[in-house]
Amino acid sequence: MIMGAPGAGKGTQARLLEERRGVSHISTGDILRDARRAGTALGREAERYMAQGLLVPDDVVIGIVADRLAAQNHSRGFLLDGFPRTVRQAEALDRILGEGGERLDAVVSIIVPKDELVRRLAGRRVCRQCGAMFHLDVDPAARVGRCDRCGGELYQREDDREQTVRARFEIYACDTAPVLRYYRDAGLLHEISGVGSREEIFQRVAASLP
Image (cartoon, rainbow, N blue to C red):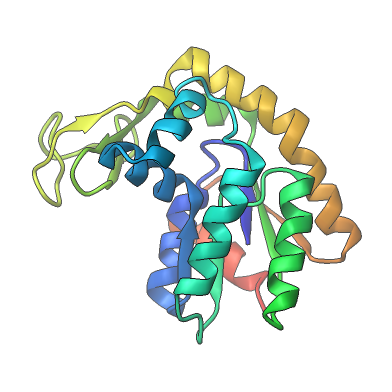
């Protein structure tokens, strides 16, 4: 599992682990945004919360993760990104994994100063077509407003706007930080610095995994 405040780089590091270690990357944020773009009932329900920077209700997210874990082949392991975000979700995950004879090996928490997080989120741009991420300052697209991979339009997600970002930080501090204590008490938590290049951070992440 990989954890961190909004903008800490969870998704980037998760994709690197998927590419280099062959693990299944399960991102609840990506699942919910796909459902929102598709206009499904789940997507419409999730949009009401995500647009305000609020957490999608536990029961909805727990069901999504349970279905995804059951549907995919995890012979080389899996990586959870964006779940759990509450202690209730963490407890539900323990039950889900226990029923399948599985368990978590490690929980990696990426630590980044708040000022750096605000800067990262304000400059982040996402491709509407393929979901690739860029940053106006540190990783800009070759063409302004266009994705380097597919040529799709780049946009700023609603949940990356300043007002929403502030709400997301407050929610993380109130609801998600207790999850870190939950896994610290279980002896699974590894805290690493999320400052530096992608490769530097990846080496720290990889060194913390079994």
